[in-house]
Length: 276
Image 1 (tube, rainbow, N blue to C red):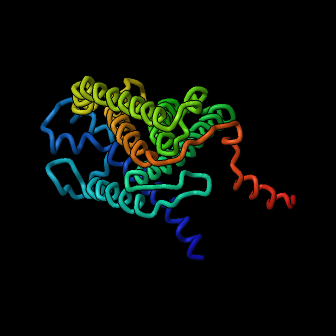
Image 2: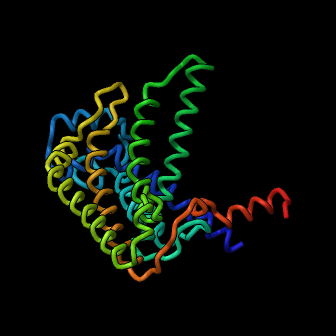
Image 3: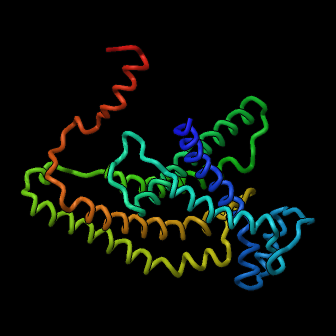
């Protein structure tokens, strides 16, 4: 019973985090207007959000009680989610605190895939069966897919499941393998540094004016994805450094096609179908 409760909490936290983060993102013009100064464009955009007009404003002129609670929820559910995340049987074993953050983001990404699929199925249903397509499904799918693409890369780095070519690497002695690991990590960190250094100004400008997609639904894809790219790439670089430190004293591993086979998963499938 306790195990089931822990598993339920582990999946409820990412879902609650997504809900709160979605609310904060959609109402971000209110935060920018109260914390970053007045803007006629943002004021007009804020009016189009159709925020409940009877809610009390708690900060400045625009942030209401639900906005504040959602912002607090983002922080609370993120912390609880990181603290309660547990390793699945097929996942990498050795974790630090940063690993837990990466895995929690991975859990959020998995639920985003479910939401993305649900949006696409809903659009297919209403468009082809009810002949009443939506104005928001296409852009929302693109928006969610962008977050999935970015966050999945961080999870892949933490799990050491990103694409690697071992043909020459496995033939090297451990000393030269470490040299190659250092070089690859240095390249990742350098790429992240120059990407953040060169893209920070544009990302900040897009976020500051809350740049939207320019469609009927008009989601703030440019305003959110550009900063998210810099944030996730920075986490990937930090994760690469952590991987280098964690794996430094590991014995050489000879890779083969059998690495893609999960023995625990095979055993569970055998029990499910009743095979010996």
